[in-house]
Length: 260
Image 1 (tube, helix red, strand yellow):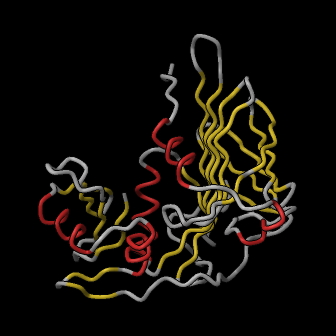
Image 2 (cartoon, one colour):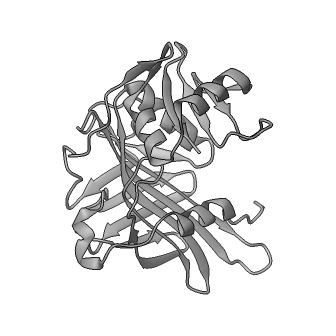
Image 3 (spheres, one colour):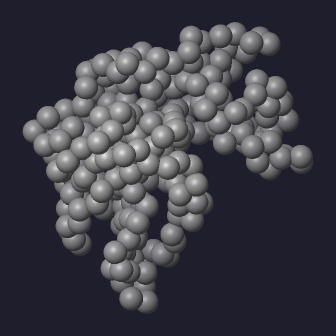
């Protein structure tokens, strides 16, 4: 039986990262699901159905239960997304729910992000970049549920991708609506700095999380690289002194992302 582990670090980040907008401002959030949209996704955990019953209200149905939660919109971009979240429980379960848009300017950036996400949660995505992952754990002593669900819409240079590599349109379907084809959010243009090409995605993350170019370059220079799929990841968290930054590059050394 799997160990029951609550994602405490994630919860702390979610609680501390942002406050909420007023409910009437729901249209300002970069959510993935318009009201009326229904997603059905199947992974090794089973079938999950997610219905947008309101601008920020979602109904989740899976083999163990059906629950409706009201998401909280973010006031600041968090790991690339100005979406919505809900870390909460109701006495019988604990839920960590995320929904939002993720913006990229390169296909390498998309692939690296998916590879990273797949290291801790099984994801399924569509040809048009709708990404869903979910898992359920139970505490052995009393069956208390920990539910984690992610719903993301990927945009590549402001538009939904088409024919996204690795897509599984048979195990992920959406009815009753879809996310917008285009987004108004603009990533900064890619720049070459000190001989390194920084993708727009990386520059945007650095701005959001107050990470300097000097910190990124120091992490690449000092940290031991680890292979993640066909990409390389450098973590400054284990350096002495610590640098609060993790950097992902492709085989050419281009910096695809830099985040806490």
